[in-house]
Image (cartoon, helix red, strand yellow):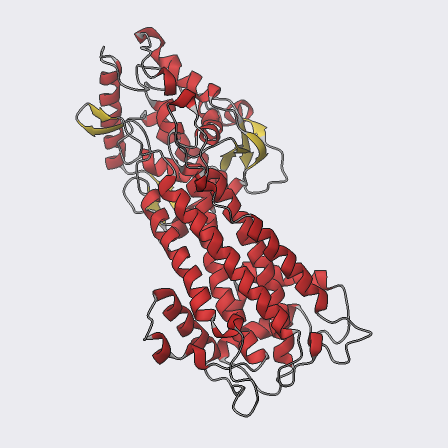
Length: 503
């Protein structure tokens, strides 16, 4: 990971955005970028003084785009915009999401096409570097004219209003911005002729949630392959469906990647493949088709990652400077390019959980060599791992209810001016809920796969699987009788989230 990041100069990636949000990378703005921002601002000031109508600079907003604002009122226009559009409701977004929004918006503004005041970018950088995060309600955006409501709340602190969280402890109460400014000897910023509009036009709310989702879904994909490999050896299933020669005949990138991952995870295993001398010719799809199913989800994740990377380095403002004192009004704020891949990734995450639950069920049946029914010897007085599958089933079913694509909906806003909206903001929040449930399903499979692998001893699996099993057993012991498995499930969930199994 690079040691510093220069806004407006360097390329922003999802992982780099997260590192910046966690203050693991120094953030700065170069002198060259400062000059570019100042020059663009001067052009906007010149346009604002002209008599020709330019949207949002000397006109009203949305359906008021034909209303010319008198010159002596154009400064207050931008401040009123932030206040009037701060209409969010619901639980505040996590601190990390608020910080990701600040980081993305600052990078977009530093590209020098929005024409904001230099004071605006300096104050946003101050908030990032001093770990102050504006309080942003989670509901209120339709993901089209920019994430208007959440971005308005995000930038209320620039005019001395709204509330700020300090640091990363969400349990601490937020403080009024005015109080924080007094403490640091700061004053509210006087917004320039396009500052407010540039601040709230954009997809930073959608993209911030997507950054988190991309990171966590990638982690789930890696764990699904690792835990799936543990389950293969745990129930002594066949490894032939992962043969490189087979996947060369149908070389979808995701399937090839997953098959390779499964082989690597089990490389050097001492556990013999099943079906050499038994009635079962081949395993159920949840085992045999992991490359195809996990691989399709991997392809969906990759698509979202690629689209998101483009979005993180784009100008999503409106209107934007395209030449000397020339602006074009368009639809760069529209969330549709993000909304569709987000819905695709939501389905991919849900499917990853669905096939994981089937492997959990399969491991309980007692039809595999050495592995007892319900993963516990002498089940009867003890229920074993029976009810863990119920929880997995509930989580998978809950995810299914979240799979209706948010982008399929549209409600006209702005008195019909905004007659098609993306709902990407809803889709991005929904994706994180599905990924959270997926992490829990994988945690349950980890418990079952680890328990099954115990019954294959003294034989060992591959090096990667054995490492994961050793980490699991360091935190959660083999179950010889019933206990409160909810504690094990939470510990396993924490292991999946931490990435410790992958090391």
